[in-house]
Every structure is written in C-alpha cells, then in structure tokens.
Amino acid sequence: MAAIRLSVLTDETTSPARQLEACQGAAAALGIDLGDRIAYDLDVSASKIGPFDRPELGEWLRKPAEFTALVFWRFDRAIRSMADMRDLAAWAKEHRIMLVFAEGIGGTGRLIFDFRNPLDPVSELMMTMFAFAAQVEATSIRERVAGAQAAMRTMTYRWPGGQPPFGYMSVPMPAEHGGSGFTLVPDPYGVEILERIIRELLDGKPLAVIAHGLNQDKQPTWRDHCAIKAGRPTGGRTGGPKTSPSRKVDRFQWTPHTISVILRSTTLLGWKQHKGEPVRDASGAPIMFTAKPLVTREEYDAIGAVLDSRTRTKTTAAVRSDTTAVLLRVIHCADCDGRMYLNKGNTGRLPTYFCNPHSRGTVCAHRAMVRAERIEKYVEREFLRLVGSIEYRRTIVTPGYDPGPEIAATLAELERHNARQGTHKSKSAAALWQRDADALDARLATLEATPARPEQRKTVPTGRTYADDWREADTDGKRAMLLEAGAKLTVRRGARGAKSLDESLVTFALSGELTPIIKEAEALAEAETERPTVPTPAGTRARLNEPADHGDTSASKPRNSAPPAEERRNVSTVLPELTSAGKPRNDAHTVNGWPAITQPRDRLTLADPTPTGAVQQRAPIPA
Image (cartoon, rainbow, N blue to C red; front, side, top):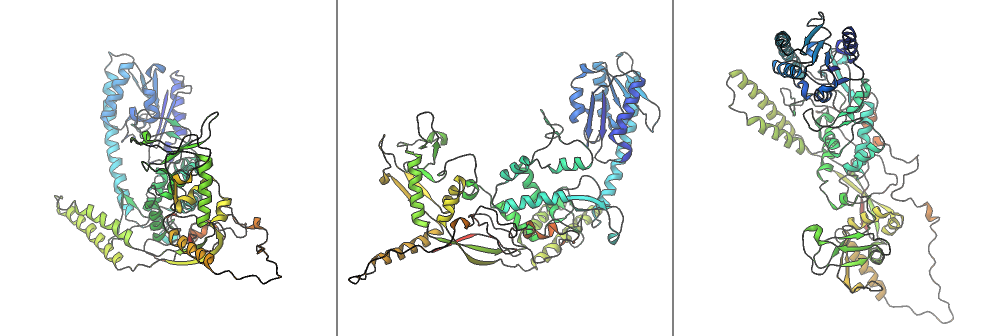
C-alpha cells in the first residue's frame, strides 16, 4: 500500500498527485501491486501526529495482514521524530513489512528497509540514522515557521497562511497596503451563509433549526467549502486524530455548536488571534488581518446579545415542529403543577392530554386527564375572548452602541495576563509582559472614554388583531402565540367517562404585558353594557349595524407570509455592508451608524414591509 501525507504548511512540490506518482513508480519497479490500498492524510503534520494516529494511515496500520509493503514518497512524509521511527520500525519488524521510500533524503535514490527478515539489524540501524536527520530538519523548520508567523502577526492586514477563518479567502496584498504577501477579503459563499444564519437568527429560529436547514439544503460546511475550492475531496474523519472510534463521512454536517462558534468568534471583526487571544498593537487596539471585516463591532455585540438570550426561554422552547400539541407548555395539572402531554392515542382511543409525573421522577395523587379536542376548543374560545379584538403595534428598534461588551472582554484578557506577572526569569520577558499590560490598559482607557449611544424605538400601528393571526396560524404558530401571551391552563381531575368538558375544573389565564390591556378592554366593555338604553320612538324599526366593508379579507397579508417581490426586504437591510461589493468595511477603530438588528425574539413579528433598518416587534394596544 501507499501512504500520502500533506502537511498543514503546503506548497506545490509536495502535492498529493506528485507523491502518488512517485509511489506508483517505486512500487512498479519492485513488483508491488498497490491496487486501491492508498491512505490519504491531508492537512496532517508529521511533527505533531505520528503514523498510528493519522486518520487513514492509522487505520491501515491496524490491518497489517492486508499488505506486505508500505510505500512513502520521502522520509519526511512518514515520520519527523526518533520516537515515531522507533514505533514504526518495531511495528514493521513484528508484522514482517517492507518499508519503501521512493526518494531518499535530498531527492537521492530509492530507500528500502526490508523487515521481512527479523534477524537483519541493518534496516533498523539505517532507519534510526535517517530518523535523526529528519527530526533535526523538522526542528529547524518549526523554528523558522514560528519566527515568520510571529513577525507576520504584528503586520496589519497580513495573513500568514493556512485555512482562512470562516467567511474569508486569501488574495494577494493590494498595492495600497504594501503589495507584499497575502491578505484576507470576504468570501462570497461565506458571506451568503453568514447572511442567512444572521437573518434566521434574528427571525427567532434556534441554532438547531438553522443548522438543520443548512444541511437539508446541502450547503457545504466551511471545511468542505475550502476543500472544494482546493480541489480536494470533501468530508473526512469526525473528531480529532486520536478519537476512537472515529467515523469517516463524505461531507461534514452543520451543527448548533459550529454556528455558535462562528457567530461568537472575533474573526468576524477581522481581528488576528493567537492562542485564543486577540493580537494587539502598542496602543492595545486589535491588529486586523483584513481591511474588510464581515461585521462591525455594534453588529457583533448585538448578535452576541441574541445568543446570550437563548437560554430555553418560552419563545425558543415554542419553536418545535415535531409535535401537534397546541397546548404544549401551556396545560398543567392542578394537583402537582406539572406539564401535561399529548397522547395521540391508538386504535379506538382519542387524543388526550395527561399528567405523567413518572417522567419527572415525582408523584401526583390526582393525575389530571382531559380530551384534547375539548380542551383545545375551550382554550381557543377563551383566548380569542380575551385578546382576539386587541390590535398590536410594530416597534421599530434602532440599536445603539455600548462599549461595555468589549470593555468586559478586554478586562478579562488583562486579568489573565496579570496572572502571569512575576513568573518571568529574564528581564526581556518581563519587559514584554509589561508592554502587553500597558497596551491592554491603554485600550481600556480608550473604550471607557467612548460614549454609549442609546437605542431608539418608534411604535406604529399594524391594523391587525390577535384574532387575525390566530385564524391564519398553524399549530406551531398558535402555540407560540399562547406562550408569548403568558397563557397557563390548569386542569383538575374529573369524573371518568364525562360526555363534555366540565369547565369548573379548568382555569385559563394570561399574564405579562397583555394583562393591563385586557383589563382596560374589559372595563370599556363593562361601561358600555351599563350605559342607559335610549328608547326607540314609536313607528320606527330597529336595524342591526352592518359590518364595515373592508374589501376582500383574503387580501389581508398573513403575518407569516412573504411580502410581494417589490416590497420584500433585502438581506442587506440587516447587514448592508456584507453585500456591498468593493466597499471597504469599518475596521475595529471606526464607530459608524449601523443598521437595526432585531432584539431577542420574545414575541411574534409581522411580515409586512418595514422601512430599511427597522425591526418589527409586537406591542399590544386596545382595538
């Protein structure tokens, strides 16, 4: 078999195609049939990961009975340390495997170490000598690379190489920035995916739903996207190289954790990072790896605030599509106050809500049970009686700017930095520590001097009522409306075999911001009924009030429907600069006016057109 390896630090001379061609040539000269026994380990460093820990080669090494020779291109494609050499030689000697290197060190002739004869010590001795040379070379390379990367970390807009972070791609440095090396710019596919994620996040979708949608639409993950651009196969081993057992997949999947890491990473701001911390200049300001960051600081903080609010609140819990229970998290048992769940029933039995204390590890002396159809009709009647005629307003929110989040992050970084105070043995190291401490302190002073801008809110009427939305909502929408209104239904245990719902055993109430509105509407209705009746003069006929003609009600736009194409909001109204081609983005030091971002979704929104930079939220008012 042949083993192909490509380090994280790649170049044209060590391409997989060239390695395979050299291995095939050496195998043919020795009469070795490789077949399809080829292990590809790309983006794997031999200095960090030994042969037995590599995803594909490690799996082959655990099946030595399937081959008698192992072919590498060069020595450094196999091992980079004496310890790895010792392990590989011992394995080859134990299993009688011949090791072949198509080219020797420096491109010399073919090297063959035949361990099929366990009594011949020459192969092991020669491998030890070559492994020592490879280890010395690896150490030298590592030092040169580390020094070059350390120097490039301090260069503004300079990208040292490797896979770019999410949403960026590498391009030659423009002449206005020096023209030397490479920098990063927004990647069109990354921008498209980021816009979609943020748009759906601000629409109230949980990260799990967003990830599921990306997978359903077969959108490549960032790792697969980079592989496609580089002409490499997608997918690979799940988990780290030492994960056991690992699983090979044809393509990686989006996960809620992956999306959360992307949205919380300061690389969206264009900040360079080293060992998880921002790289800062002498003044404490973050050093940028791009002149066109994907988001501004205000947008980044607003997205973080939305993520921080996603802690299984009523709103996020309401977003479920795997149940037909309208009253999930609304209906409770009066005896134990535990939630009741829908049993869809089987042949001959009707769906029923029931109290199940065993699932919670508790005991309920009088477990409630009620027919689903009856209690759902009761809730619909009571809900619309209380709020059906109430109109709600749309609140247009323009967020402000608060330096607080960056102050907190910088202060935490300074605290971690101060924990290393006094641990240095040399004056040079102590001076470097003091330089970084002064830079962080200077950055804190700048941020503390930056004034905060409060958000601005404007409330406008919508012309729609709760009853309008209820009629047009599906099961998920109705459940969300109940939870947002603070609905709670309690049911006491009744007689078995009842022919109808005993309403004396149920209690339905709303709480929260609707309470004062409901009381005001009830007071107005009560005053209307108590007003004296004016007698009708003799000889006249009473006539019922005819409903006002509002035209075709079907033209009323559903809250969850898409607006007409000419009115539809473009994604750029959420993050306008993401789609502005060629327009330089604000860097970390610029604070400009920025578009509105929806607050954490704790109430339903409308789908009718909104002015650019506006956010829709419902605020109830009397009809």
